[in-house]
Amino acid sequence: MRITPFLLAVLVLGCKFDEPLPERDLKGTVRIPKEALEITLLDDEGVERTVSGDIRMLGPVYLGAFPSVEEGHYAFQHPEMGPILDADYPGDTYPYGGTTIGRFDFGCYEQLVCKVVTGRYESYDDVLEFFRDVLDDEIKGPDNVLVGSGTEYQERCFETERVTSDDEVPFVDDDPQEDTKPYFKPYFEEDGDDWVADVVIPHTLFVEGMSLWGWVDMPSPKFDFVTCDESAGDYFYRYSEQYYQGASYPDVLNYPGLYIDDGDWVVNDAPMLSNPNKDFEVTLDFKYED
Amino acid sequence: MMISTLSFALMGSFFGCDRNAQGLVPRPSGAFPGVIEVGELAIVTKEELNLLNGEPEANPVPYVRKDNCTEREDGTLRCFYGQLGATPVGQSGGATFTFTGNGEEVCLVVDPETVFWAQSISPVNRQDEFAYPDFYNDDGDLDMFSGLSSYYTGSPGVELGDFKGFYTDSLGQEVEIEYGECFQTGAQTGMTDAHAGRATVEHCGIDTDQREGIEYTVVLQTVSVPLDDGVLSFGAVVLEGRCARLGPTECTIRGESLDPISGKMRHCTDLLERAQCEKQLGPFCCANPEMCGDNYPDDACEEDVFDIEGLTNTRDQWCDATGLCCGSSDAGGDTGE
Image 1 (tube, rainbow over the protein chains, first blue to last red):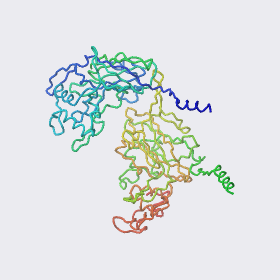
Image 2: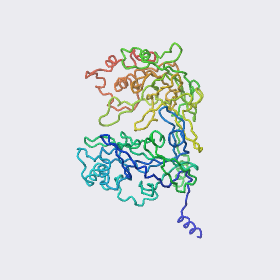
Image 3: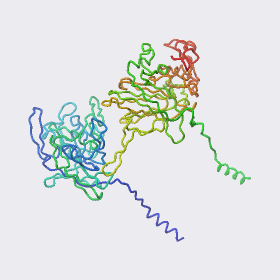
Image 4: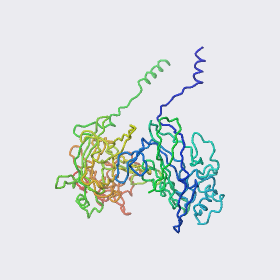
């Protein structure tokens, strides 16, 4: 008789099983100096002009966890590499994990393949305005007619992506401050001389003493991004419109040296982690100039 | 009475039923070791392939035949036809051979035990060529791997190995590295570690650029040994050039099914292969049912099965016209086609 309440209590309390998994969610911030957003663009006539301070120019930030970071491989600090197995490739960095702050997304038009990054736009009008006023490259539809309004753009995305709300279109977000903890939206905010974003590197192997290192893929003068493969990703197939939607190369963290080019900003002082529960801060403070 | 019956049933359930599945597992044989080392194979040039082909003008699609599988003047084998036995439970079996890089792309081809096909059982749009089932018990399977000999972890002729190595980073974490270079693509995009199934040819290309004179090892790992004789026969060849251009198929290596006693080509298996290569499996199985499986549908061999180009034929007429009957002078272990 006395046993029954005891068993009931145990059942109500339940059992907790602590799996000692070595993978952890690592939280922290990424800083990019505002100076990084001074970008020289080249128009079709070859005339240069400089755009400053527009966060929409920023490509994806790649952030990885590596055993260590070394000098001597490239003109910037670079993660340690394993053996060279192919004469055409450097050694693999064998990262423990990684993430991006912003990723390439299909902008619903062929013209925008590999040019739209998530976390950079608040609305469809924002995208239209950026390509029209900043890049001087107005967005045109498949019939070569200019996209006239955000509403028209939204309708196009709903139709081609078969969605019914803006929440399902990753590259526009009118509520970047929305609470999505424990993960953070890929948004940068101004903080003094820097742009700062909260970030989580999810489910990463934690090894004491490992280093966090990364870089931001800055656009070329023609607003192209080295880390995006235009012949990859989902295939867009709609009547006579047939093309790939573009995607990041899958091995950017394995072979970063292949993808970092002129104008990219790289972590120069990679923090070493000794406690997975302590927030990290990574600063992309070195501009690589070829 | 009721209690007695229940007791008996209960006792019966305790003992249960069992099945002896020994017949489904080939026994290791002293005559045929489970692990063999073949030696070095030459990289067969286009000219040599024509030589192996026997009658290149009559056979415009090049293939390798056992009876033409000769050695070079220096004693290097141009191709290899051999037999493997089963290994004891828990041990990996197979064959290994080497070749020397020529600085160009080469194509490795291995073909175990005649042919296999899936029976067409669809009630509509049945493919009549495959209406007759394959004879399962004569099929075996080998998986092919290859890489630089310096990375091979096995002991040739003694123990099979692989091409996996380990890299330890500065924090002591171990990462497995695949040094093998024989990648076979699968049906899904990005799948590069695929292997063909029973009795089906496998091939892969290796680029030996900047590795002229460097030795490579090829591992043919036994996946299954035929149940009918417990011996897995196979043929292997290294061809000069890209696999994509050469297009190796089941028809590239012929006559690889060998008799365990005589070591010669098994009776009529060359015709079975030829029938498959010439898309004549349907009439072949009807004319030579002993070469194919059981449980074929009643309508697998209807009257028009031996028709050639719309002309009605009897079995004998079809045999004379095609030479694909086992009783004919073309059939047999020693004869070619």
